[in-house]
Image: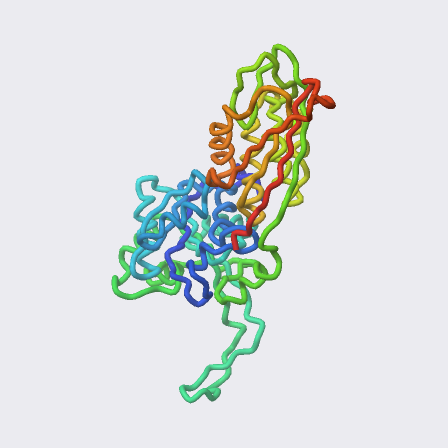
Length: 387
Ligand code: MG
């Protein structure tokens, strides 16, 4: 990813208004998971990282909730409803960013999840000389023009032809004017066609084979075969009890004469749950992501660690299915705090409360927990594939 500071400022519109029925499935293809996250999310994350601002997602009427779920946590995204045709949808996006009056805008189709940042750079730089720039690829197969009876009418010259991809880049004023001039009832294959109809030049820059459009059900097959439907993880943690420390368990502050010591808030229960999630996706442990040697985690609320693990699980294509936690200590009594703990863990892990079990046990005064020297926690969690 190039440093966003090295790119000129640009706005972006991602068109996600299609019904995507050719790809099969219940949800439109742009909201279905592909390689661990919704199709739409892939390119939008790239655009966020590249500094696109404003960043508008054009959605079909009634589909904003789908899009918001697919893009959870990407706070920069804004949403606008599309129209009856692709052209009308893009125009709605262009009109929506008018108040920001950006100089340059990228227009991208959500059905192309992979968006190499090198292409973004090439497109934006071509706008120095032209009002429009599009990524293209050569045609490698030979071509035939078909007759109506499915015989070959003649050969076509592939040397003159290019395959056109998105994103397409434009000077904002030029593409907005071209869309406003476009005859309302007709659709356009893409925005380059709209700009060209307004007699403006469109530069051809090198595209990228990775920016393949997801079209058919077979494009989704790697989800069906590559990601198991569920995964399981376990986590275990211990912290020492000391006088004069705060006691935090499951994100709840507990009134007790002893508290747990550690680098963060030492919430042993949330640490066990976090490690269980990280374990399920094979992403190391809590110390890998939040090293105790890093001063920024001193006194940190451990809820942040859990939220981060849940986010990583989402990126790997999973949501938390259920959590089963056991807290092992002689004191304090966990029962009175259990409802609040359950509520808080469910909130942090983004699950219903009935998917969270919090149990407590003593060790019959045996061992370090029995002597009140520390508290231990162990958690088992199941993750379910989003696919
Ligand atoms: Mg710990």
